[in-house]
Image 1 (cartoon, rainbow, N blue to C red):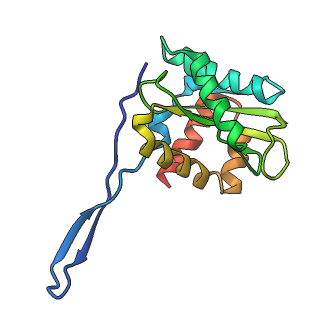
Image 2: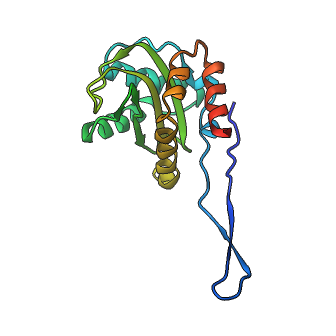
Length: 182
């Protein structure tokens, strides 16, 4: 099942210079993670114990949910990105990502590795929370916005702790949804 993607705009009113009359400006579209992620693309627990196996496990979540995608092409795009610099951003979090024509739109998968996996994270610590983001080159702008949104939400210790302790994909999804509305 594919969820339709909504886009939210914020309108800011500021007075026109010298007139006192407001000018309405439309800001950038807000990318909601709940528009990119579905419970069927969340796995708890992830079972892989090595980085490459874990990437494959996450890519398989995308392949199961999106019929007809080339998992190997997605995996190669993500591996190529990992060669540049590990996407293990620290605090037990990794956001592997890549751009590929194997998917038609920006797609997010996620999972929890209970024991933590050596993902060559920037802080050298094992990673428990994984968010895999893949999309076509044409979605590069939203790709960057989604990465930023994931990283921003995951700065909160309480949010990370709640995700890491989620016992079911629906619970994980609900935690993400709640965080986006507060």
